[in-house]
Image (cartoon, rainbow, N blue to C red; front, side, top):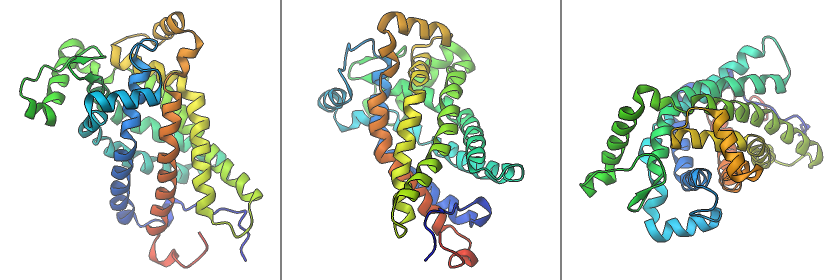
Length: 313
């Protein structure tokens, strides 16, 4: 029996690219539908002043459901689906960078660290404008707004579709010009590059440690499914302070990361930096399990035909 302590990693050159992209888009869309409500809740918790509207994740969930219905959890979702493009760019950059770095280092930690950071840099350059628009849509509550802009669309049928999006885009452009769509770009890079760079090494680290502790016949996929949420919780805890600042910069229209940090500390103290952390971890746990299981399964079903039975994956 093969030693299960060595969890083999399916690399870029092992994949059938056509299968990888087709199945990847479908998988990503399913994941986004399931976790978007918690993304909306996290953003509202991070932007609100103190506990002016919601007392926590569960309280926000109940209040949004009561006042806005199920549709309230999906404000800005149609716009957010465009991040599917950045998602595919992310995985492509990650896998290609791993392949490139492997020519200079055999360390899996080094490959994961560099590839994760590089992938996030590319993805955020595409994602930030979409995030800015979708976050302003997330802030639209029934009859009011938590952000700088409020939708003025009169036709409710139009508002349900892309009428709100068009209105928000116009308001952002009038207020800040093209640069408004990249508000918080630096804060996003400072949040997501470390998050991605940290997640991948911790993911492989936890998988290796669990592999040493588990029976040799324990399925690799189970170990990876456990390792993903552990890595996500670790990365979320380390990067949440900057995520709070990023959300405020993008939604409230602030120009300075340092001044936003100072204001947050003055108004709410160090605990303000933990806002939305529980929602982030709660949403990341099931989503990361799905992502890890889905991604590892995706790579397995996307293996080149000649490699399917060649070794134990």
